[in-house]
Structures are given as C-alpha cells and as structure tokens.
Length: 173
Image 1 (cartoon, rainbow, N blue to C red):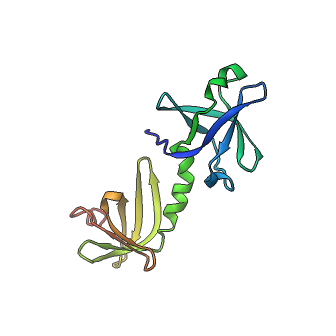
Image 2: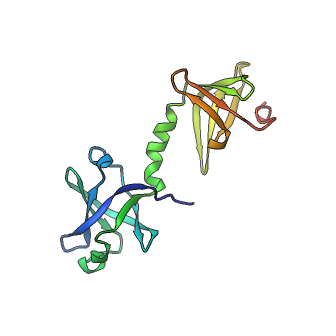
Image 3: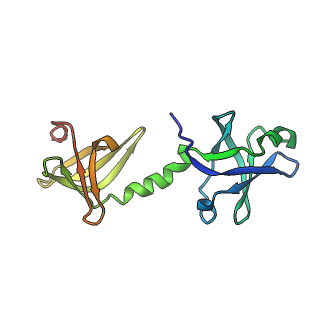
C-alpha cells in the first residue's frame, strides 16, 4: 500500500523525559482536534520514513509527546529534533470516510445529463471506493468513485455529474 505523507501534524521541538519520547509542536489545524495516531512519517534527509507510535500524551493545547516503537532512550531520538511530523494515509482514513459520507443523498447524472440514480451508500474497498446508487428503474448500481470520472459537484443542489465509461451502468444489470 502506498502511503501519502502530505498532512503536516507538527514539528519535533525537543526530547521529553529519559525514555525516548519527543515533544511535537502541533500545527494550528490540530490544536482542537488530534487524530487517533498509530504511526507517522518523519521527513529524514528529504524522504518520509514511517514510525510506529507506542504512546501519545497531550500535555498542552498545542503539544504532543510521542514515543516511537524501538526508541527507548534520549540518545536514539535526539537526532529527530527539528524534523517535521506528517500523518500517514491510515491516519487520514477516518476523516476521508467522514468526508465521503456527505455524498449520501446526492443525485448522480451522466455527462449527457441522464439521471443515473441517488447515492444510498459507499463501499470502501482497498484502493477503490464504490458509490451505491438506487437507480430510477429500481436497480442497484455500483459506480467507481474516482476523481477522473467526476465532471462537476454541486453541493447546493446535491448533484454529482460523472463521465462514466460506456457500458459501465449495464454491468450491474
């Protein structure tokens, strides 16, 4: 699985205690809501390196104490001071799912303005999200949700316009 390290959680400012914990100064977007953390990426020599987290403490409004698996001493984590900490795609998954759930109830139209159906649910598969549509004729359609297939989204009218490959909607018949 390919991970994306593109959401900055914060920066390591110093070590904490004597058991290998580090202090992370959080970015403003995470001051009020800290995601559940299992792992993070540290940018070392310009490349994202994954680290498993064994403990997280939140001692202050904009501070976290993180302890990484396999790093039990100050000497081992001292070199991390100043490094940026990024969330992994696994950490992003929950918020991504919540974002997609707003699509439930949207009407889906094809590029030629034909109504395909109403989104009744989402199916999360590894590497692919499927939209579950209730079609006008009573059928259930499964449509891949991918940015290359989306023409336009109208949030006010709850409309999703998609350019689907020819014959895709007939596969579900």
